[in-house]
Structures are given as C-alpha cells and as structure tokens.
Image (cartoon, rainbow, N blue to C red; front, side, top):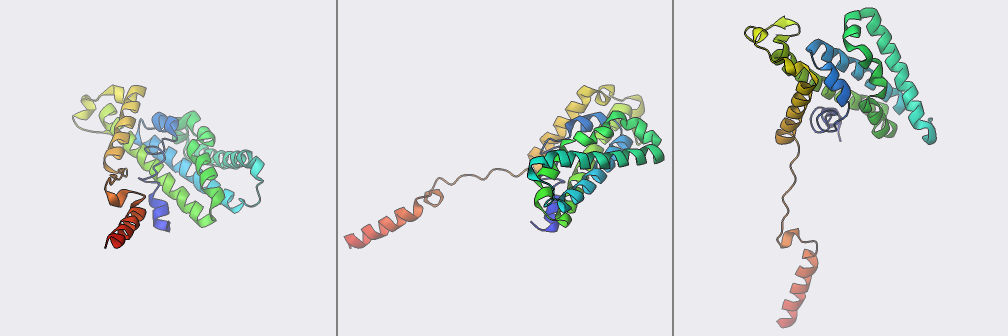
Length: 225
C-alpha cells in the first residue's frame, strides 16, 4: 500500500464511521450542527495524529503486556492538552461539545488505530493513516451535520436558509433523526462505494482441481492415441 492509498482508505473504503462503524456515539451527539461537527472532527484528528506518531515511535519500547494501558495514558494526555486549548481559545466550541470532548479518550477510532496500525508501522505511515482516518471522520460528521442542520433547523453554519427556515423537520435534530441520517449514509456507502463481492466461476477455470483434471485428460488422450 502506497502513501496515497494509506491516506485515502480512511475516507471511503475504511471510513471509521460508515464502514468500520466506530465512534458512533460522538458522531450522533455532535452532528446536530456543522460547527460542532467540524470542531469534534478537528479535535479527534489532532489527538489521533499525535497519539499515532508517539505510539509508533515507542512501539519497540512499550512492553506488549501493558500496551493498552500505555496507549490510554498517552491518548488521555493528548486529549487533556486539546481540551485545555479549546477551553482557552474556543470557549463556545467547548460549551457545544460538552462532555464529548474529554470522552475522545475512549473513542474507539483512536484506540483502534493505535492497536491495529500505529504499533505495527513506521511513524510516517502512522501519521498518514491518522490523517486519513481523521479526514474520513470529519467529512462524515460534516455530511451528517449538514443534512441534520439544513433540514432540521433550516440553517447552515448558523445562517438561515430561505423557505427551509420556516419549514424545517425538527425531528432530524433529535436522536431518531440522527439514527435515520446515519443509516442513510451507511446505505449510500454500501450501495455505491463498497467493493462488491466477486462472482464465482463455476466452470473448469474456477475449479481448484482444474490443473489435475487437465493433466489427467492429457495422459488419457495420449494413452488412447
């Protein structure tokens, strides 16, 4: 897998939310408006990038028996730093994200990439993987938030949209609407982007014994001749 494939897989083929179905809780909770969604996506991407780089750099030092506690401690440290920065420079975003900002510590995407990729690959590859997964997570949040905010609130990024602002579907900003949009996006990805299974060939070419049969037939034909 080259660097471009390593990055792009997190956007479609291994999208952490729509394909791997990770990070569902913060996705549903913070996708009611685009600003919160982008803030959560950016915060998670920064934590994912920093943790992947450090875990990959220390992968030969961290004992295998205690790797999960070590990963959690490192991730918690980066989440704390991100939370402090958000509180200092973006208090409105901190208020809108609420408890879901510190809960990045237990986000399955962060720990999953540390366990499945960062501890087995180089620092550069781990950083690219983090950026790809972070981009996929952020784009999914933005797509869900756009649908829910436009049709649920009649606004986008807080700006009112003519007609929709007076005829919005409020349930889309609630939990049932979140699950509906989430399922809709998963269905779209499965329909148009996910790799379809290959059709099986039931002829001789698809048979694992084709070579043996061909050889046997050749011997038989030779003996008959």
